[in-house]
Each structure stands twice: as structure tokens, then as C-alpha cells.
Length: 107
Image 1 (cartoon, one colour):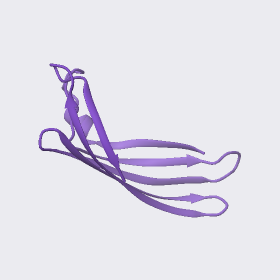
Image 2: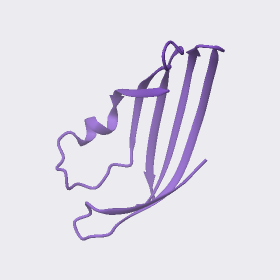
Image 3: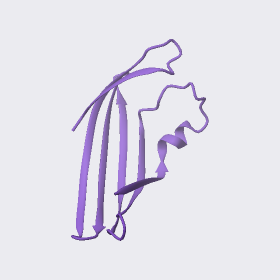
């Protein structure tokens, strides 16, 4: 099954629009997206929405949360929803900060 996510609103891209490519990643963001899927040879279609967000804290830590909800019209029809949480650590590994070590624990 092919699954395509399209970001509709991304606060991260709005905040980072004027920054250089060498800037450190922004850990504070929120975004809303649309999810669309198509089944193989008339296997059905699905769609839904997605909400993501992240908060940086204590200089080197971040918390991320993602939620998805949608329907699949096929055989059988299916409603689905789910979430994912992550907590992580990030540290610059060079002097200008554009290369970082990132470790996440996901649930």
C-alpha cells in the first residue's frame, strides 16, 4: 500500500524560513498534515489527518508527540488511529552546531 503524507501547516518551516542551512535544528514546532493511501489494483482508498509537535527543554533534550486518525475504504472497511511519543537527547558534535548526535526512545 502506498502512503503519502502532505504537510499542510508547518510551524517549523515558518520559523526556519530565514535561517541558513548551517543553523542548528529547531526542536520547538507543531504541524498538521493530511494522509492519503491507495490500495493495489482497486484495493480501496484511505485518508486521514496527522498532528505532530515537539518541544526542546534543558538545552539538550526534546519531547515529540504524533497523533494520526483516518479511515480505509476497502475490504474490510477500517477506521484507525494511533499515536507515538518520543523523548530524546541531542548534542552538537562540531563547533558550529550543524552536525548533531541525536538519540530517541519511542513508544
